[in-house]
Amino acid sequence: MLDRHSRFPASASHAGRHGYLERPVVDEWLAVLGQVIRCQWPQVNLRQHAFALRPSHDVDRPSRYGFARDIKLARVMLGDTLRHGRPRRCWSVLGFACVPVAGCTRSIRSIPSIG
Image (cartoon, rainbow, N blue to C red; front, top):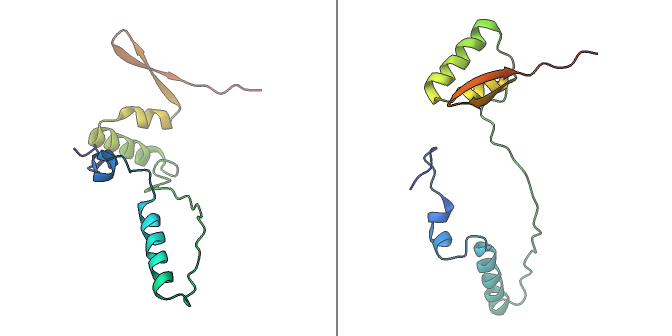
């Protein structure tokens, strides 16, 4: 039931199985609680919160290949290839594209134009 990163998929949760995954359930319950508080204590002023989007990025090692040179770069890339079994990731960093050809893979180097 877990994905390849050992994460629990949202679709397997109670909300995913019963069709309310996209509903703001916590906000709905806070609205109900606010109504109860206003009925019980009419003199209390409750704050109204506005939605704000704060994008974030999960970047563990942003310069993994960017600052490595020569032997260190080769060692890091070989280690990643052997450890994770994803050589295409390493090749794409160097500007190679993996192209399937009759059941095998050959690499084509993209050469920038001069001029």
